[in-house]
Image (cartoon, rainbow, N blue to C red):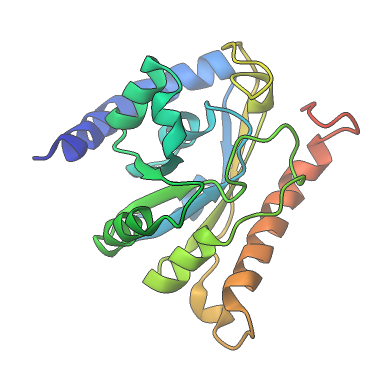
Length: 217
């Protein structure tokens, strides 16, 4: 068993107690977990406020995840680098064309696994400021995997670009119904249309929670 597979197996064993701990500490509430397909390849695409987003999404859902993460994060600090290696994250070159990362992501999906990524491309201070990148929809289109939108709110209060501290915060997570590539086959720009529908699904959950200042849940 490879190191990455062993770590994911270990995570699957640890997930139930980790989920319980997350629910107690962060008052974590999850809606729509049943929308994640129980088998086969899946692209999970979420909004991104905090370094807490990947582990909280990972413990909230019933399948093992492998996330795409920008390569600069490996050098941020020792703890974050260890976590990325433990989760077998795929390093993504933000400045160049990420050929290697896309090849690894496609191979992971073609093996019937779940890939997580963040179309905003970075942690943001406020939802909706950055246009989503097309990579999540492109991977779903290329592999035939469903694109599952995930919205997470509350993590904008901890481990963010403006506040690196780990603080207790109430978190809610929604898993939306899958977006299937074949429903867009007749579109002029199917990947663009899938990306727009991903944005709309997440926006419907997050917009009611965002105040004019940009970050209160």
